[in-house]
Image (cartoon, rainbow, N blue to C red; front, side):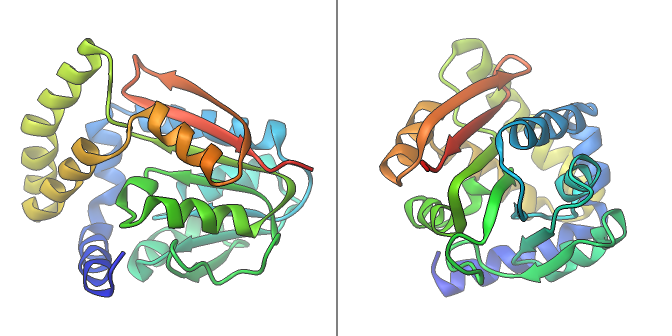
Length: 230
């Protein structure tokens, strides 16, 4: 991600922070909460004991779920949009909040036993570099879970994504947030991102093993899990 692109995207997320949670619930008909619970379950069922990182944490929805699932673990929520983190800090008060770039994570090698990223990887300007950073901060045996809107391959899912992107996100999101440009940008990230299969290949190329995945709600969203070999 270039510095100018990163600054633009950061400012956009800061602008929509006040309405971000409400719009997530509304535009997914509440399904995003179920998806997040499944992502956290995928992480906590496979990750060893140790520190956990919510990457591109936004307003800390996943961090709060991690807190309930692993109440004794160190929790870190990292996002490059400070206002998003501030907006969600109350959801997981004990978690550390860190303003940081996913392409240059401010953490040591092997610092975490698990990393989860919800709807953030598609916003990275350099996917391979983002994957490499996650791999770097994970300890041997660590687990990386991605919850994301991948570019759909099935015809029915492609049709749904197209209708959703054209009619729902920019119109409803723009109306309620007052920032149509921001939601038009998010539509473009969905259209231009990798397919699930392409993303799995990127994880393998980036050093992850035992890469598995599953679709959620007819493939509207998906979970991909990668492990770091012992």
